[in-house]
Image (cartoon, helix red, strand yellow):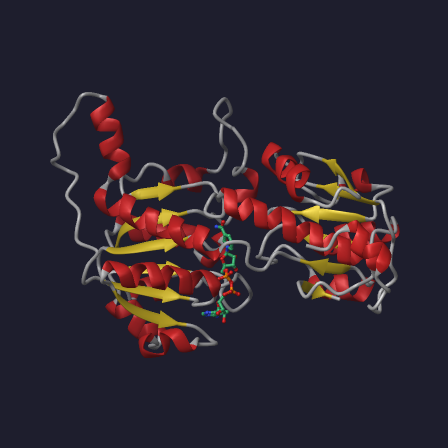
Length: 348
Ligand code: NAD
């Protein structure tokens, strides 16, 4: 970890202007666990101001007087927000997440705003949650939990299948896809993989996307959301899948066309659906809305299916991952402060 002491001693060896210390950072979408993480793991010379609201064009002014913004998955870093940041003299964004589909990178580059992320805080955290969703849907643990608490010890309706011998299709075999593959190999699953940049460790498993769709009992998404992958799961791809397929998405909501998936559930094409992410999650996830009316009819329809399991973007949420997120975000900010490269830049 880079400390403030290191920073004062080191030469500015980057091409960027340094802001020096103490560095003021506006943290948006801040929860108690973010604050706890930074209190425990961040360099003490970073001064954080916490805002629980999601960053957007209306509230970016809250960051006035800060040197950097720290943002999360559903914060809005579109052109308008970046332009307002730039006008306030803020030239740094530290994302405390891996995905960056919410950032207009071209505008950031044009404005000279540096963006860094936490590329790999814990692939295992997300992979383990992915497999937890597969097992819960398969063995109906969520139903069993409630039944037993209700003194209902009947097991009819809870019939599952052996994971051993089943074919799992992994779309995207980067850090998280690979960690998921390693776990599933231990279960005795057959893996079929697809990636635009294959990895040596899974060299024997790569097939075409069409073959993956046609052969897989379970399909799990681990590729980023970008123009090429938006609505990857649509009526065409669904039609190529096995009847009763299990579909898991712990990547980004926009990979799945939700309305099409609802049709797939109604037609029984999809036998099980596990989502940790949802295209319109920004209005719902990370908040306690239990006393409010939810207006999103598509989301509420999803919740009516007995074979759908939704978690609210918690796949990353382990103690180990939080420690990594806080530590690496702090290192990114300290590097920014000293005008040094972090190695985690999306825009330098
Ligand atoms: P990564 O960059 O290590 O791996 C992504 C892989 O997808 C790469 O191998 C890449 O080549 C591949 N890919 C890119 N375009 C593709 C395409 N069109 N088709 C198939 N593969 C393609 O990223 P990662 O750390 O494994 O994360 C994967 C995704 O998981 C992230 O983009 C992020 O959106 C999501 N994520 C979710 C959570 C969560 O809590 N639910 C946490 C972290 C990351």
